[in-house]
Length: 393
Ligand SMILES: *Cc1c(COP(=O)(O)O)cnc(C)c1O
Image (cartoon, rainbow, N blue to C red; front, side, top):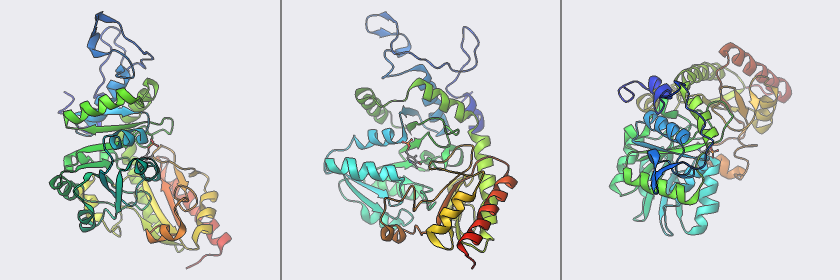
C-alpha cells in the first residue's frame, strides 16, 4: 500500500505499522542496546546491537527513504555527521566540486577538517552550469550541491548538473534540507544521494538535532552502513522518534510555510526601505522558472536587503515580537537572523559582499503562525528601521 500512495500519506504511514500484539499505533522509542538471539549468531529480525540498528531508527529510515523516492535511508546523529560519513569515503587527492553558497558548517567541515587530510574542494557558483563543468578534474568524486542555497536562495538545475557529474564519473549529492522531499525530490531528477539536516523542516519543531542520507545504490548503502557501525555517529532512538513525529505533518506544514512566505515576500517587495527580496516564488527571482520546474512549492525561507546596511538589519531583528531572533530554521515558529552578524559573520566583509551577501541582508524562517500576525510583526520592525535608522529611499 505504502509505495503506491502519495507523499502526504506515506509521510504518516511509511515504515510504521501498529504493534501486532498490542495494537499500539505509534512506533515505540526502543531504549535498548542489545537483543536476544535465537541461536548464537542468529539475531531475531537482524537486530543485534543498537549502534548497528535499532527498530525506532529503522522505522524512521524507511519513512525517509519513502519520502525521498529512495530505496534506502540511513539516520545520523546530525546533518554534519551524515556529511562526515560521505567525506570519509574519499582518500587523499580526491576532489569535490561544490556550490559556493553552502551551509556554513558544511564549508567548515570541508575546509577545516577534510582539507587537512588532502581532500580538495573547488567552490563554484552552482547556478552557472559552465562554471560547474569547468571545475571538474579527473580526480573529482563528488558534486556537492544545495538548492535553494543559504542565505541567498539560489537554485541550481539538479538534472543538468547530475548528468554532467555522471559523465565525469562523479556522484551527485544534494543537501535537500531547505526544500524537503515534499517540495523537491533530487533522486527523481538524477542525483545519486540526498542528504538532510533533519534538525530543520523534517523534524519541524526545533526540538531535535538529526541527519540522514538517502539513495538507491545498494552497494553504497552497504558501505555507508558499515561505516556508520564502525565509527558510531548514528541517530539515537528518542531523536529518531521525534523526527518520525515531525514527518507526519510535513505536508501540511510545508504548505503553510510556503503560503505564509509568499505573502510576506510580496509584502516586503512593496516596502520603501527594502531594496531587494529574494524568494524563489517571486517572478523577480533569477531562477523562478527553474523553481516551477524542479520544485512543487517555494518553501519557508526568505532573504531580503534593507537600506542602511547592518544597522538596519540589527534594528529589524530586534524589533520583531513574533519572529524570534535565532539561528537555525524550519520549525513551526518564525525566526529572524542577520547573516552578516550571525551565521555568516566568519566570512570577511569583502568576500561576503563579493559573493552577493550584502550588509543589509536579513533572513526569515517563516513559521506557520497566522500570516496577518506575521505581516503585522514585519511591518512593526520596518517602522523601527525607518525611525531608528532614518532610512527612506
Ligand atoms: C543545519 C544544516 C546542516 C547541518 O545540519 P546539523 O543537523 O545542524 O548538523 C546542513 N545543511 C543545511 C542546509 C543546514 O541548514
